[in-house]
Image 1 (cartoon, rainbow, N blue to C red):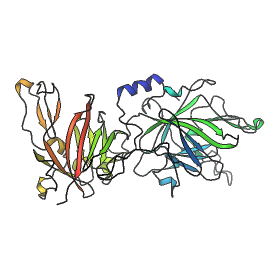
Image 2: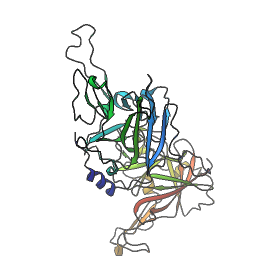
Image 3: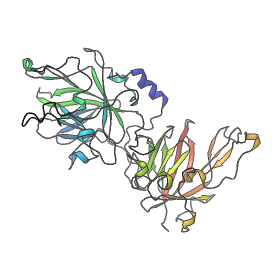
Image 4: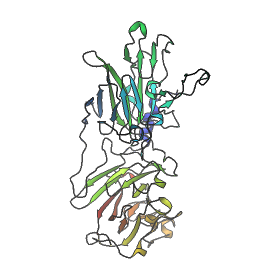
Length: 448
């Protein structure tokens, strides 16, 4: 197992913007005040959360019972899923010293991502430098794991009643590798996050202080986590405690489609009196930031190319795609209104011919409206209108060369769920002047 190279994590952080962290997507409706998370989360009957430091939290679990205790890291809630194996509401579950992940053999979250972890360690006897984990490494740099099942043993089927296969192997109690290999008889040794004292030590469990984890959640958010205790303040075992905090991480695979998905935290929604504004970190070269207009939130579809119901539009650098045509299985369509009035546009267009979908070689937002300015010799012949924006090329039209400027366009977007919206691009740069940070305003309009 490769160990996290702490400089690698730091280098990743410097090379990619993570957007606004610690901000769950808003579930408010148009006109509501801006929703802000309340952390620490509420926990539950067998769990509690508390602030541990700057952007860090502690979780404590009473895992002494016979049932699994399910937790959602994002909201810091205890969950009671009706069907844990097919639920997207939980990330980790505790029972005694065992910890399972919502992925692999332990769960298949619908519409989400399998929870995976990378278990890291430093030398035995050294306290892990937890503060130095500032970003999640990519899956090409290290090997992430999830829960599995044991394979059938060589004697299975030969001896009546013997079955050694199909037993759960929990990633968190398996990785990272042991400093002290468990004894076959005494069981003394290391098991992922803990050390068992064995028979001579009455099988007391203590935390391996040289171990830490990077965990990818169902929502494609990344957390660093380390276990801190297995007994409560009174010394009663079966009360695991841990410290964790959100960190930037790489994009998630789309799970079979052709489009990578940016993790949550890349879009921040602000409610005004009659519209929503979105500030988007679209800096990833290959990953799309997917937006659900009706819910006013960023989503992370596991297979966006074949998901008609979870997203409307998505952003990547200057590109904007719509969930229909060549870009998705939904029914999203856009109509462009060059120099239309934002204030007076209160209803959708009734003429269906005005609406466009993405083609294989032409995104509707980059194609409509048609270009008015294009190819001036003084600008190197590369300046042009591209749907929603104008690119200045080598000309300085007031904002500098190679500048992206939103055109005066009010789009009408037919959402995947039959709702209609007016939408306009406000800027392509954030307050610091960094590119690939588009800002957008949208508001509902009357259906045709």
